[in-house]
Image (tube, one colour):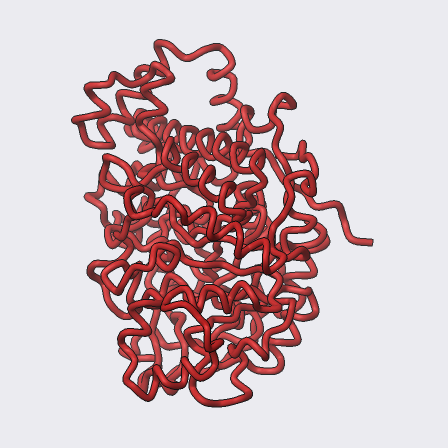
Length: 520
Protein backbone atom coordinates (compact mmCIF):
# COMPACT_ATOMS: atom_id res chain seq x y z
CA UNK A 1 0.00 0.00 0.00
CA UNK A 2 1.35 3.43 -0.91
CA UNK A 3 2.34 5.71 1.91
CA UNK A 4 0.29 8.78 2.71
CA UNK A 5 1.81 11.72 0.90
CA UNK A 6 3.91 13.80 3.27
CA UNK A 7 3.75 17.55 2.74
CA UNK A 8 6.23 19.10 5.18
CA UNK A 9 6.10 22.49 6.81
CA UNK A 10 8.03 25.42 5.36
CA UNK A 11 7.74 27.66 8.38
CA UNK A 12 5.74 27.95 11.58
CA UNK A 13 3.28 30.41 10.06
CA UNK A 14 2.44 28.02 7.24
CA UNK A 15 1.82 25.11 9.59
CA UNK A 16 -0.64 26.94 11.82
CA UNK A 17 -3.95 25.04 12.14
CA UNK A 18 -5.75 28.39 11.80
CA UNK A 19 -4.76 28.59 8.15
CA UNK A 20 -7.33 27.15 5.72
CA UNK A 21 -5.13 25.71 3.02
CA UNK A 22 -6.39 23.18 0.53
CA UNK A 23 -4.66 20.21 -1.01
CA UNK A 24 -5.29 19.87 -4.72
CA UNK A 25 -2.98 16.90 -5.08
CA UNK A 26 -5.54 14.11 -5.19
CA UNK A 27 -7.27 15.35 -8.34
CA UNK A 28 -4.79 17.82 -9.83
CA UNK A 29 -3.56 15.22 -12.35
CA UNK A 30 -6.65 13.05 -12.62
CA UNK A 31 -9.43 15.58 -13.26
CA UNK A 32 -9.58 17.68 -16.44
CA UNK A 33 -8.23 21.13 -15.73
CA UNK A 34 -6.78 24.19 -17.43
CA UNK A 35 -4.01 26.45 -16.23
CA UNK A 36 -1.53 29.12 -17.19
CA UNK A 37 2.27 29.25 -17.41
CA UNK A 38 3.72 32.44 -15.93
CA UNK A 39 6.86 32.88 -13.87
CA UNK A 40 6.42 35.29 -10.94
CA UNK A 41 9.17 37.54 -12.31
CA UNK A 42 6.81 38.26 -15.23
CA UNK A 43 4.11 39.74 -12.99
CA UNK A 44 3.47 43.49 -13.25
CA UNK A 45 4.81 45.90 -10.66
CA UNK A 46 6.83 49.02 -10.02
CA UNK A 47 10.18 47.33 -9.43
CA UNK A 48 12.66 45.54 -11.67
CA UNK A 49 10.75 42.23 -11.65
CA UNK A 50 7.50 40.74 -10.41
CA UNK A 51 7.24 39.47 -6.83
CA UNK A 52 5.03 37.57 -4.39
CA UNK A 53 2.90 40.51 -3.34
CA UNK A 54 -0.30 42.24 -4.39
CA UNK A 55 0.04 41.60 -8.13
CA UNK A 56 0.55 37.87 -7.48
CA UNK A 57 -2.67 37.82 -5.48
CA UNK A 58 -4.44 39.81 -8.18
CA UNK A 59 -3.20 37.29 -10.75
CA UNK A 60 -4.71 34.45 -8.70
CA UNK A 61 -8.00 36.37 -8.64
CA UNK A 62 -7.83 36.57 -12.43
CA UNK A 63 -7.20 32.82 -12.67
CA UNK A 64 -10.16 32.08 -10.44
CA UNK A 65 -12.49 34.32 -12.45
CA UNK A 66 -11.30 32.72 -15.70
CA UNK A 67 -11.78 29.14 -14.46
CA UNK A 68 -8.03 28.47 -14.62
CA UNK A 69 -7.27 26.18 -11.69
CA UNK A 70 -3.50 25.63 -12.13
CA UNK A 71 -0.66 28.18 -12.03
CA UNK A 72 2.56 26.77 -13.48
CA UNK A 73 5.86 28.56 -13.01
CA UNK A 74 9.59 28.02 -13.47
CA UNK A 75 12.06 27.11 -10.68
CA UNK A 76 11.99 29.63 -7.82
CA UNK A 77 15.62 29.45 -6.72
CA UNK A 78 18.18 32.27 -6.50
CA UNK A 79 19.76 32.75 -9.90
CA UNK A 80 23.21 33.58 -11.22
CA UNK A 81 23.82 36.88 -12.99
CA UNK A 82 22.17 35.64 -16.20
CA UNK A 83 18.83 35.29 -14.41
CA UNK A 84 18.21 31.74 -15.61
CA UNK A 85 15.98 29.85 -13.15
CA UNK A 86 17.49 26.61 -14.48
CA UNK A 87 20.98 27.38 -13.11
CA UNK A 88 20.33 28.25 -9.49
CA UNK A 89 22.62 28.75 -6.51
CA UNK A 90 20.54 26.27 -4.48
CA UNK A 91 17.89 23.61 -5.09
CA UNK A 92 16.20 24.54 -1.81
CA UNK A 93 16.45 28.30 -1.38
CA UNK A 94 13.98 30.83 -2.71
CA UNK A 95 14.98 33.82 -4.83
CA UNK A 96 15.12 36.92 -2.57
CA UNK A 97 14.37 39.04 -5.65
CA UNK A 98 10.78 37.72 -5.44
CA UNK A 99 10.20 39.12 -1.94
CA UNK A 100 7.49 41.78 -1.89
CA UNK A 101 8.81 45.00 -0.34
CA UNK A 102 5.27 46.37 -0.21
CA UNK A 103 4.25 43.53 2.09
CA UNK A 104 7.28 44.23 4.32
CA UNK A 105 6.28 47.87 4.45
CA UNK A 106 2.73 46.93 5.44
CA UNK A 107 4.13 44.70 8.18
CA UNK A 108 5.89 47.77 9.60
CA UNK A 109 9.39 46.43 9.03
CA UNK A 110 10.40 48.66 6.11
CA UNK A 111 9.96 52.45 5.76
CA UNK A 112 7.98 53.51 2.69
CA UNK A 113 10.75 55.81 1.48
CA UNK A 114 13.18 52.90 1.47
CA UNK A 115 10.84 50.57 -0.44
CA UNK A 116 10.38 53.19 -3.14
CA UNK A 117 13.95 54.33 -3.66
CA UNK A 118 16.66 52.00 -2.33
CA UNK A 119 18.15 48.86 -3.96
CA UNK A 120 16.59 45.55 -3.00
CA UNK A 121 19.51 44.31 -0.90
CA UNK A 122 19.55 47.52 1.13
CA UNK A 123 15.80 47.28 1.64
CA UNK A 124 16.08 43.71 2.88
CA UNK A 125 18.80 44.72 5.33
CA UNK A 126 16.57 47.51 6.62
CA UNK A 127 13.66 45.06 6.85
CA UNK A 128 15.75 42.84 9.11
CA UNK A 129 16.51 45.81 11.34
CA UNK A 130 12.82 46.68 11.38
CA UNK A 131 11.92 43.07 12.17
CA UNK A 132 14.33 43.00 15.11
CA UNK A 133 12.74 46.18 16.50
CA UNK A 134 9.06 45.66 15.76
CA UNK A 135 8.26 42.00 15.02
CA UNK A 136 5.60 40.32 17.12
CA UNK A 137 6.45 37.47 19.42
CA UNK A 138 4.67 35.13 17.01
CA UNK A 139 6.85 36.28 14.10
CA UNK A 140 10.01 35.92 16.16
CA UNK A 141 9.02 32.37 17.08
CA UNK A 142 8.22 31.70 13.44
CA UNK A 143 11.66 32.85 12.33
CA UNK A 144 13.38 30.73 14.95
CA UNK A 145 11.28 27.69 14.04
CA UNK A 146 12.02 28.21 10.34
CA UNK A 147 15.78 28.23 10.90
CA UNK A 148 15.56 25.09 13.00
CA UNK A 149 13.30 23.19 10.59
CA UNK A 150 15.33 24.10 7.49
CA UNK A 151 18.80 23.87 9.03
CA UNK A 152 19.64 20.82 6.90
CA UNK A 153 20.11 23.04 3.84
CA UNK A 154 19.89 26.58 5.20
CA UNK A 155 23.12 26.47 7.22
CA UNK A 156 25.23 25.47 4.23
CA UNK A 157 23.43 27.83 1.88
CA UNK A 158 23.77 30.88 4.15
CA UNK A 159 27.45 30.17 4.71
CA UNK A 160 28.02 29.62 0.99
CA UNK A 161 26.30 32.89 0.08
CA UNK A 162 28.20 34.87 2.70
CA UNK A 163 31.54 33.51 1.51
CA UNK A 164 30.61 33.98 -2.15
CA UNK A 165 29.85 37.67 -1.59
CA UNK A 166 33.11 38.09 0.34
CA UNK A 167 34.92 36.40 -2.57
CA UNK A 168 33.50 38.92 -5.08
CA UNK A 169 30.98 36.46 -6.52
CA UNK A 170 33.51 33.83 -7.56
CA UNK A 171 32.41 30.23 -7.83
CA UNK A 172 33.31 28.10 -4.82
CA UNK A 173 35.91 26.15 -6.81
CA UNK A 174 37.95 29.41 -7.08
CA UNK A 175 37.87 30.18 -3.35
CA UNK A 176 40.93 29.78 -1.11
CA UNK A 177 41.63 26.09 -0.71
CA UNK A 178 40.60 25.91 2.94
CA UNK A 179 37.16 27.36 2.15
CA UNK A 180 36.83 25.47 -1.11
CA UNK A 181 37.51 22.20 0.66
CA UNK A 182 35.36 23.07 3.69
CA UNK A 183 38.13 22.67 6.25
CA UNK A 184 36.37 22.82 9.64
CA UNK A 185 38.68 25.44 11.16
CA UNK A 186 38.32 27.74 8.16
CA UNK A 187 34.53 27.41 8.17
CA UNK A 188 34.41 28.08 11.90
CA UNK A 189 36.47 31.25 11.46
CA UNK A 190 34.43 32.58 8.56
CA UNK A 191 31.20 31.80 10.42
CA UNK A 192 32.31 34.24 13.11
CA UNK A 193 33.62 36.91 10.74
CA UNK A 194 30.58 36.70 8.46
CA UNK A 195 27.99 36.11 11.19
CA UNK A 196 25.93 39.16 10.25
CA UNK A 197 25.92 38.28 6.53
CA UNK A 198 24.94 34.69 7.33
CA UNK A 199 22.04 35.88 9.50
CA UNK A 200 20.91 38.20 6.71
CA UNK A 201 20.73 35.29 4.27
CA UNK A 202 18.68 33.27 6.76
CA UNK A 203 16.32 36.19 7.32
CA UNK A 204 15.77 36.70 3.59
CA UNK A 205 14.92 33.02 3.21
CA UNK A 206 12.42 33.33 6.06
CA UNK A 207 10.81 36.28 4.28
CA UNK A 208 10.61 34.39 1.00
CA UNK A 209 9.08 31.25 2.47
CA UNK A 210 6.69 33.19 4.70
CA UNK A 211 5.42 35.21 1.75
CA UNK A 212 5.20 32.06 -0.34
CA UNK A 213 3.19 30.30 2.36
CA UNK A 214 0.74 33.21 2.44
CA UNK A 215 0.46 33.24 -1.36
CA UNK A 216 -0.01 29.46 -1.44
CA UNK A 217 -2.83 29.74 1.09
CA UNK A 218 -4.41 32.51 -0.98
CA UNK A 219 -4.26 30.33 -4.10
CA UNK A 220 -5.63 27.22 -2.43
CA UNK A 221 -8.55 29.08 -0.92
CA UNK A 222 -9.47 30.07 -4.47
CA UNK A 223 -9.11 26.57 -5.89
CA UNK A 224 -5.81 27.23 -7.69
CA UNK A 225 -3.11 24.55 -7.60
CA UNK A 226 0.55 25.57 -7.82
CA UNK A 227 2.73 23.78 -10.37
CA UNK A 228 6.53 23.96 -10.05
CA UNK A 229 9.59 22.80 -11.94
CA UNK A 230 12.62 20.71 -10.95
CA UNK A 231 15.67 20.87 -13.25
CA UNK A 232 17.30 17.45 -13.31
CA UNK A 233 20.79 18.95 -12.90
CA UNK A 234 22.20 21.62 -10.61
CA UNK A 235 24.71 24.38 -11.27
CA UNK A 236 28.40 23.67 -10.68
CA UNK A 237 28.56 26.91 -8.68
CA UNK A 238 25.87 26.10 -6.13
CA UNK A 239 25.66 25.47 -2.43
CA UNK A 240 24.49 21.93 -3.16
CA UNK A 241 27.63 20.90 -5.03
CA UNK A 242 29.95 22.72 -2.60
CA UNK A 243 28.36 20.98 0.39
CA UNK A 244 28.00 17.53 -1.24
CA UNK A 245 31.04 17.18 -3.48
CA UNK A 246 31.16 13.42 -3.15
CA UNK A 247 27.80 13.12 -4.94
CA UNK A 248 28.92 14.92 -8.12
CA UNK A 249 31.41 14.30 -10.92
CA UNK A 250 34.07 16.77 -9.79
CA UNK A 251 37.70 16.18 -8.85
CA UNK A 252 39.61 16.97 -5.66
CA UNK A 253 40.11 20.56 -6.81
CA UNK A 254 36.41 21.07 -7.43
CA UNK A 255 36.84 21.02 -11.20
CA UNK A 256 34.48 19.18 -13.52
CA UNK A 257 35.37 15.68 -14.74
CA UNK A 258 32.39 15.03 -17.00
CA UNK A 259 29.37 17.22 -17.73
CA UNK A 260 25.75 16.98 -18.77
CA UNK A 261 24.21 17.60 -22.18
CA UNK A 262 22.43 15.89 -25.05
CA UNK A 263 23.87 14.24 -28.16
CA UNK A 264 23.83 15.53 -31.73
CA UNK A 265 20.40 15.37 -33.33
CA UNK A 266 18.28 16.81 -36.11
CA UNK A 267 18.39 20.24 -34.46
CA UNK A 268 22.12 20.43 -33.69
CA UNK A 269 25.01 18.66 -35.40
CA UNK A 270 27.17 19.06 -32.29
CA UNK A 271 24.51 18.40 -29.66
CA UNK A 272 24.21 20.52 -26.52
CA UNK A 273 26.91 20.80 -23.89
CA UNK A 274 25.14 22.11 -20.79
CA UNK A 275 28.18 22.03 -18.53
CA UNK A 276 26.46 20.89 -15.31
CA UNK A 277 28.17 18.27 -13.17
CA UNK A 278 26.60 14.83 -13.31
CA UNK A 279 25.58 12.71 -10.35
CA UNK A 280 27.56 9.85 -8.89
CA UNK A 281 24.52 7.62 -8.73
CA UNK A 282 26.38 4.80 -7.00
CA UNK A 283 27.08 7.05 -4.03
CA UNK A 284 23.54 8.38 -3.99
CA UNK A 285 22.29 4.82 -3.91
CA UNK A 286 24.56 4.07 -0.93
CA UNK A 287 22.90 6.98 0.89
CA UNK A 288 19.37 5.74 0.00
CA UNK A 289 18.91 8.76 -2.30
CA UNK A 290 18.59 11.06 0.71
CA UNK A 291 19.77 14.05 -1.32
CA UNK A 292 16.82 13.56 -3.67
CA UNK A 293 14.39 12.95 -0.80
CA UNK A 294 15.40 16.26 0.72
CA UNK A 295 15.12 18.01 -2.63
CA UNK A 296 11.60 16.71 -3.24
CA UNK A 297 10.64 17.50 0.35
CA UNK A 298 11.27 21.18 -0.36
CA UNK A 299 9.48 21.13 -3.71
CA UNK A 300 6.42 19.28 -2.43
CA UNK A 301 6.17 21.82 0.37
CA UNK A 302 6.13 24.60 -2.22
CA UNK A 303 3.98 23.04 -4.93
CA UNK A 304 1.02 20.75 -5.53
CA UNK A 305 2.51 19.44 -8.80
CA UNK A 306 6.10 19.42 -10.02
CA UNK A 307 7.53 18.95 -13.48
CA UNK A 308 10.85 17.13 -13.78
CA UNK A 309 12.91 18.72 -16.53
CA UNK A 310 14.87 16.29 -18.80
CA UNK A 311 13.18 13.22 -17.34
CA UNK A 312 14.93 10.94 -19.80
CA UNK A 313 18.20 11.51 -17.93
CA UNK A 314 16.99 9.22 -15.15
CA UNK A 315 16.88 6.29 -17.57
CA UNK A 316 20.06 7.11 -19.52
CA UNK A 317 22.02 10.33 -19.61
CA UNK A 318 24.58 11.77 -22.01
CA UNK A 319 28.00 12.01 -20.34
CA UNK A 320 30.49 14.42 -21.96
CA UNK A 321 34.17 14.78 -21.03
CA UNK A 322 34.65 18.15 -19.36
CA UNK A 323 37.54 18.88 -21.74
CA UNK A 324 35.29 18.47 -24.81
CA UNK A 325 34.11 21.69 -26.43
CA UNK A 326 30.92 20.12 -27.80
CA UNK A 327 28.65 17.19 -26.96
CA UNK A 328 29.82 15.07 -29.90
CA UNK A 329 32.24 12.97 -27.87
CA UNK A 330 29.74 11.98 -25.19
CA UNK A 331 28.28 8.57 -24.39
CA UNK A 332 25.07 7.15 -22.94
CA UNK A 333 25.28 5.99 -19.31
CA UNK A 334 22.55 4.22 -17.35
CA UNK A 335 20.77 6.32 -14.73
CA UNK A 336 19.06 5.12 -11.54
CA UNK A 337 15.84 4.25 -13.35
CA UNK A 338 12.90 3.05 -11.30
CA UNK A 339 14.94 2.62 -8.12
CA UNK A 340 15.01 6.35 -7.38
CA UNK A 341 11.27 6.83 -7.91
CA UNK A 342 10.47 3.73 -5.87
CA UNK A 343 12.40 5.30 -3.01
CA UNK A 344 10.55 8.61 -3.45
CA UNK A 345 7.20 6.84 -3.67
CA UNK A 346 7.90 4.86 -0.53
CA UNK A 347 8.52 8.12 1.32
CA UNK A 348 5.89 10.42 -0.20
CA UNK A 349 3.25 8.08 -1.53
CA UNK A 350 1.71 8.98 -4.88
CA UNK A 351 4.01 11.41 -6.69
CA UNK A 352 2.26 14.42 -8.32
CA UNK A 353 4.93 14.60 -11.03
CA UNK A 354 4.85 15.56 -14.70
CA UNK A 355 7.71 14.20 -16.81
CA UNK A 356 9.29 16.46 -19.41
CA UNK A 357 9.65 13.89 -22.17
CA UNK A 358 10.31 16.09 -25.20
CA UNK A 359 12.77 15.28 -27.95
CA UNK A 360 13.93 11.80 -28.90
CA UNK A 361 12.40 9.47 -26.30
CA UNK A 362 13.15 5.74 -26.22
CA UNK A 363 10.68 2.99 -25.30
CA UNK A 364 12.63 2.52 -22.06
CA UNK A 365 12.00 6.14 -21.05
CA UNK A 366 8.31 5.78 -21.85
CA UNK A 367 8.17 2.59 -19.79
CA UNK A 368 9.76 4.33 -16.81
CA UNK A 369 7.29 7.21 -17.00
CA UNK A 370 4.30 4.90 -17.35
CA UNK A 371 5.44 2.66 -14.50
CA UNK A 372 4.83 5.57 -12.12
CA UNK A 373 1.86 7.03 -14.02
CA UNK A 374 3.61 10.34 -14.71
CA UNK A 375 1.91 12.43 -17.40
CA UNK A 376 4.17 13.41 -20.28
CA UNK A 377 4.06 16.63 -22.30
CA UNK A 378 2.41 17.43 -25.64
CA UNK A 379 3.52 20.64 -27.39
CA UNK A 380 1.21 21.74 -30.18
CA UNK A 381 3.86 23.88 -31.87
CA UNK A 382 5.76 20.63 -32.52
CA UNK A 383 2.77 18.83 -34.05
CA UNK A 384 2.51 20.00 -37.62
CA UNK A 385 5.34 18.43 -39.58
CA UNK A 386 2.99 16.50 -41.90
CA UNK A 387 3.49 13.14 -40.20
CA UNK A 388 0.28 11.42 -39.11
CA UNK A 389 2.08 9.58 -36.30
CA UNK A 390 3.51 12.77 -34.79
CA UNK A 391 2.82 12.28 -31.04
CA UNK A 392 2.04 15.97 -30.59
CA UNK A 393 -0.86 15.97 -33.04
CA UNK A 394 -4.16 16.34 -31.14
CA UNK A 395 -5.54 13.02 -32.37
CA UNK A 396 -2.49 11.25 -30.90
CA UNK A 397 -2.82 12.68 -27.39
CA UNK A 398 -3.75 10.50 -24.44
CA UNK A 399 -5.30 11.50 -21.11
CA UNK A 400 -2.08 10.85 -19.16
CA UNK A 401 -0.43 13.99 -20.54
CA UNK A 402 -0.25 17.76 -20.22
CA UNK A 403 -0.83 19.72 -23.42
CA UNK A 404 0.76 23.09 -24.11
CA UNK A 405 0.56 25.48 -27.02
CA UNK A 406 4.25 26.15 -26.27
CA UNK A 407 6.60 26.31 -23.29
CA UNK A 408 8.98 28.91 -21.86
CA UNK A 409 11.57 27.76 -24.43
CA UNK A 410 9.25 28.25 -27.41
CA UNK A 411 8.37 31.38 -29.30
CA UNK A 412 4.90 32.70 -28.50
CA UNK A 413 2.24 30.98 -30.59
CA UNK A 414 1.56 34.14 -32.58
CA UNK A 415 5.29 34.68 -33.16
CA UNK A 416 5.76 31.03 -34.13
CA UNK A 417 2.86 31.09 -36.58
CA UNK A 418 4.01 34.33 -38.17
CA UNK A 419 7.53 32.93 -38.60
CA UNK A 420 6.31 29.91 -40.62
CA UNK A 421 6.58 29.96 -44.38
CA UNK A 422 3.47 29.53 -46.52
CA UNK A 423 3.86 25.74 -46.61
CA UNK A 424 4.23 25.56 -42.85
CA UNK A 425 1.16 27.69 -42.23
CA UNK A 426 -0.80 25.57 -44.70
CA UNK A 427 0.08 22.43 -42.71
CA UNK A 428 -1.10 24.04 -39.49
CA UNK A 429 -4.29 25.36 -41.07
CA UNK A 430 -5.10 21.94 -42.53
CA UNK A 431 -5.29 20.39 -39.06
CA UNK A 432 -7.35 23.10 -37.39
CA UNK A 433 -11.13 23.43 -37.59
CA UNK A 434 -12.26 25.53 -40.54
CA UNK A 435 -14.09 27.93 -38.22
CA UNK A 436 -11.08 28.48 -35.97
CA UNK A 437 -10.38 31.98 -34.76
CA UNK A 438 -7.12 33.65 -35.68
CA UNK A 439 -3.89 32.73 -33.93
CA UNK A 440 -3.18 32.20 -31.14
CA UNK A 441 -6.78 31.34 -30.23
CA UNK A 442 -7.02 28.59 -32.80
CA UNK A 443 -4.24 26.70 -31.01
CA UNK A 444 -5.54 27.59 -27.55
CA UNK A 445 -8.94 26.09 -28.36
CA UNK A 446 -7.26 23.01 -29.82
CA UNK A 447 -5.32 22.58 -26.57
CA UNK A 448 -8.49 22.96 -24.52
CA UNK A 449 -10.23 20.28 -26.62
CA UNK A 450 -7.37 17.79 -26.24
CA UNK A 451 -7.88 14.53 -24.37
CA UNK A 452 -4.90 15.50 -22.16
CA UNK A 453 -5.92 15.74 -18.51
CA UNK A 454 -4.32 19.16 -18.10
CA UNK A 455 -4.04 22.08 -20.53
CA UNK A 456 -1.46 24.79 -19.83
CA UNK A 457 -1.37 28.01 -21.85
CA UNK A 458 1.49 30.50 -21.54
CA UNK A 459 0.27 33.93 -20.46
CA UNK A 460 1.81 35.41 -23.61
CA UNK A 461 -0.60 33.35 -25.71
CA UNK A 462 -3.62 34.36 -23.63
CA UNK A 463 -2.62 37.96 -24.34
CA UNK A 464 -2.03 37.23 -28.07
CA UNK A 465 1.53 38.62 -27.95
CA UNK A 466 4.22 38.26 -30.60
CA UNK A 467 7.87 37.22 -30.53
CA UNK A 468 8.98 40.25 -28.53
CA UNK A 469 7.24 38.65 -25.52
CA UNK A 470 9.25 35.42 -25.73
CA UNK A 471 10.58 34.25 -22.34
CA UNK A 472 13.69 32.33 -23.44
CA UNK A 473 15.57 31.42 -26.60
CA UNK A 474 17.68 28.29 -25.93
CA UNK A 475 21.32 28.65 -26.89
CA UNK A 476 21.37 32.40 -26.27
CA UNK A 477 22.39 34.32 -23.16
CA UNK A 478 20.92 37.78 -23.70
CA UNK A 479 17.40 39.19 -23.40
CA UNK A 480 16.07 36.06 -21.71
CA UNK A 481 13.94 35.72 -18.55
CA UNK A 482 12.98 39.41 -18.55
CA UNK A 483 9.51 39.53 -20.14
CA UNK A 484 6.69 41.02 -18.03
CA UNK A 485 3.06 41.72 -18.76
CA UNK A 486 0.98 44.70 -17.67
CA UNK A 487 -2.63 44.71 -16.55
CA UNK A 488 -3.63 47.02 -19.41
CA UNK A 489 -2.78 44.14 -21.79
CA UNK A 490 -5.55 42.02 -20.22
CA UNK A 491 -8.70 42.87 -22.13
CA UNK A 492 -11.78 43.14 -19.87
CA UNK A 493 -13.61 40.23 -21.50
CA UNK A 494 -10.65 37.80 -21.39
CA UNK A 495 -11.60 36.09 -18.11
CA UNK A 496 -15.18 35.55 -19.29
CA UNK A 497 -14.10 34.20 -22.67
CA UNK A 498 -11.70 31.76 -21.01
CA UNK A 499 -14.29 30.66 -18.46
CA UNK A 500 -16.75 29.83 -21.24
CA UNK A 501 -14.11 27.87 -23.20
CA UNK A 502 -12.94 25.98 -20.12
CA UNK A 503 -16.51 25.08 -19.19
CA UNK A 504 -17.26 23.99 -22.77
CA UNK A 505 -14.28 21.61 -22.78
CA UNK A 506 -15.15 20.22 -19.32
CA UNK A 507 -12.07 21.64 -17.61
CA UNK A 508 -13.90 23.72 -15.05
CA UNK A 509 -13.21 22.60 -11.47
CA UNK A 510 -15.62 23.53 -8.70
CA UNK A 511 -13.83 24.79 -5.55
CA UNK A 512 -15.68 22.28 -3.36
CA UNK A 513 -13.91 19.39 -5.12
CA UNK A 514 -10.69 20.22 -3.27
CA UNK A 515 -10.05 18.81 0.17
CA UNK A 516 -8.68 20.57 3.22
CA UNK A 517 -4.98 20.08 3.88
CA UNK A 518 -3.39 20.51 7.30
CA UNK A 519 0.01 19.19 6.31
CA UNK A 520 1.73 22.37 5.15
